[in-house]
Image (cartoon, rainbow, N blue to C red):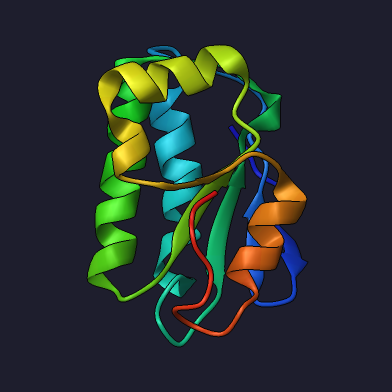
Length: 123
């Protein structure tokens, strides 16, 4: 899985496509991991626009959990946006919605993440 990063102010946006399941989770984790070192308190925030993801399995959730732990340890900020109803339900059932800053859409996430530190919040 490859991402085409887009810089939006102080936010690096990644937009994965398809399924993040057993067959794709390792590629997803590897691709995402390449962008994590720059997501620090002094660097860019990271936004995953999940509008193009139609399914995520437990192994995909694991990849995201590893990423958010690294970002938080670095003092960075990572958020998710535009979860489909199915993906949103998986996050809710698994309680992963408690681990992540989740926004209903990309525009709202960008507005929150581009605010000075500490002023943006989850929607």
